Length: 486
Image (cartoon, rainbow, N blue to C red):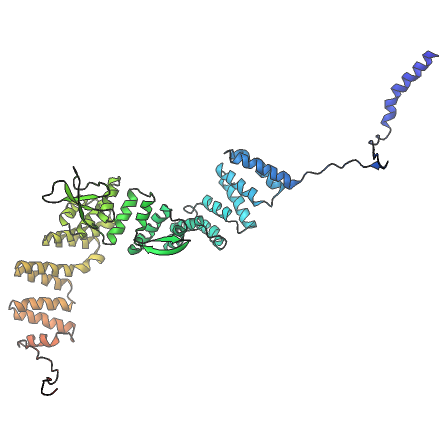
């Protein structure tokens, strides 16, 4: 009997698995509330919150970003945006990560998407404008930033708009935005420098000598301070900067500034010592010099050269400064060095300035020879000056007592401009004073041919008829009031 029981049990154990495959899975155990005795439902599994997941991914990406692991931050930021595409902050940080990993196109696409969804997003606009670059793509920068001005009055907006319009050579708009930029950021040396360039190009030389103080973002008062000097105060300084500043002062006719004297041991003319340019030694005073300060064209031209600028244009400017300041000998030497070295565009001006240097040195024929070369280079500009030049030379010869040369050059003036009544009159009067009545009358007749109602018509007619000039009688002012008829 025992053997049979064992066999049945064995069969039962073997068959059990096959039997279980055909049965439904057993129900999960049910919990029973100990107080009520009722069966309770098992707790349902919570679904993950996408916004919370996105926020967690963003925070981890932020940590990576600020550890300068920009490339590593891209994946969690991309995943965060997929989970919550409404967050512009996530997209902005992703754009910055792309930008810092040299993926500018992807960054630009994301920034443009942010602005499409939220046109008031100033930071996205500024970042996109920086990426586009006012220098490389000024039109796109303008289209991006100008709409944002109605939402925020911020320095970077005005700064980049000013740069963009400057690149487009729209100087009026560039000036408008850059002037606002320096009001908002008075320490913006580069903007002051750019403003100086604009004023210079617009020939607004007096304006280039003005810059404004700001108080609470509003115009406070006008200061007599140069825009370029303001830039210099803010550490904008190179040879080109000083070259441009010299040009501004030159066009303001501030050639040498206020000349003073100073004692400089071991100094020599042309040295710059303690913001002073040594011009010439003071006669009879050892180690003492006439000096020019920074607010002068000559100081800035010397400073530019001391900092290394070597272009012929800076020497030309220096020569023009000395010539305009009537330091003709200094100018003459510089012009000699420059002959044949300037661009063709400057050739006419070069010969014109050098001609006036010769006039200053009383080298009259040299003056006319150089003026002829200026006319040959740019006839439309300098030919109209020739008649006046002949008159100037004629008067110099008259002062020397050289009557022949005086008349010769007056005649050349008339030949140069034969339709000028005043030149014929001048030549006629010169002949009349020398007793050359026939030659004088010839000129007087030409005066009246050109101007029949000339102011001196009566006098000229008298001389033409050979009559003496008759002094005009005193004007009749009525009876004199005496003590008797008061």
